[in-house]
Amino acid sequence: MYSSTFYQQSPVAVQNAMVSARNFLVRSLRNSSKFRLESNEVASTQWLNTDDLAQLQLKRLQAMVGHAALHVPYYRDLFATAGFLPKQLVCLADMQRIPVLTKQDILHQGECMLAENLRDYRVATSTSGTTGMSLKLWRHLHSINRENAFVWRQCNWAGVKLGERRMWMRGDKIVPVNKTKPPFWRYNIAENTIMMSAYHLSEDSVEAYVQALEKFDPVFGMAYSAPLAFLARYLLNAGRRYRGKSLRCFITSSETVTDEQRQVVKEAFGVQIFDWYGSAERVSAIGTCEHGNYHILSDYGFTELIPQNDSTYTLVCTGFDNFLMPLIRYQMSDSIALADSSYACLCGRHFPVVERLIGRSEDYLLMPDGRQVFMVGGIIDGLDNILESQIRQDTPDEVRILLVPVQGSVVDEQQVILQARQLLGETIRIKVEWRNDIPKTSNGKFRAVVRSI
Ligand SMILES: [Zn+2]
Image 1: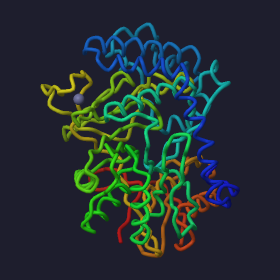
Image 2: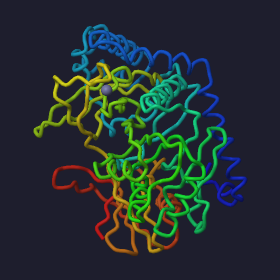
Image 3: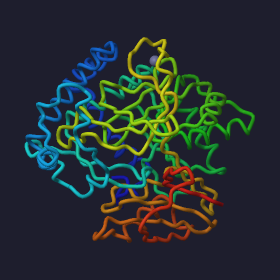
């Protein structure tokens, strides 16, 4: 909706109304009896002991694997080829008999990944460009209600409630990029939220953001960590602190939060960051509890930890809730370091404790007009047939978009340029380059956005 010409050319008041109308739907889902059922359940499963959690996981896996074997063409073939029968799944370790699923598999399989008996109602979504690949995914209502319930629980852990006054600063392109004067935010009345653009932050505009925030006085914020830290550093450099009275916390997600970001946000805003690790694939989630510890949410999905040479683990995950598009033993690109196994978190939950997330982090791009543009991986969001991508700025006046297409497929270059323009504007040259692969960093990590100037 935000990229439509009608929205882009409408006056601010109309845009506010459109943003609110769109989010009435989100709110109505959260007011449904199905949502209440799921939120009651996740409120209770968080207190299960280790054995009961393992039992719950096994039950959920048996349901998902049995369903996939019956209704999903990809798994029917896969299980037949691998000689695997769902009834052989009698303990968690049996999951290892199922081959791992990669992003490439999903790209190649397309609709063969979907359950034949659930295709009538589906919501399309895609993985974000932060992973360098835009993957088309479908979910159904149960999965959306479950996800909302887990977000609701994360808010409880952070001491806030959905519906309370909220600041939102994520990848939504709610303000047309060619706007050079405030407001760089829109009001979502349905959810009591000020939605701020993460794409208009600059030395010139940052004061207006701070003032709007102090005036709106949110109880909590849901934001990407990089633009949030930008606001915080501005306040500290100006010798100021945030003056809103009601703020209790920020909930961040999608990017790895650095220690420096946590520290400047704490200092400038006087509140803590509760980080949430999720994924568009909805196979695994890691939340932050009241004591500031990361927990792998064992009631959200089955997360297998694959040890690496450097005492970290990569993740192979199976989601419990999206029966429309089951992702079983899906290889994630992020990795984690676990806390010592003897460590018990004071919160009393038996979810495993993670010491560190090692995953997605992006550089920002610096526009000739002074804007620091965050989350530019979003340029490839929703585009088909891209296996891998990297967005690079090696000179002040040019951004290069490196793309690896799926073999034998066509990527719409004009659409890539158009989406890039919607984020970056007209003041910088944009070039698309086709590649066979994207070089990794010296430690083998993939970077979706690189700025070398
Ligand atoms: Zn805890």
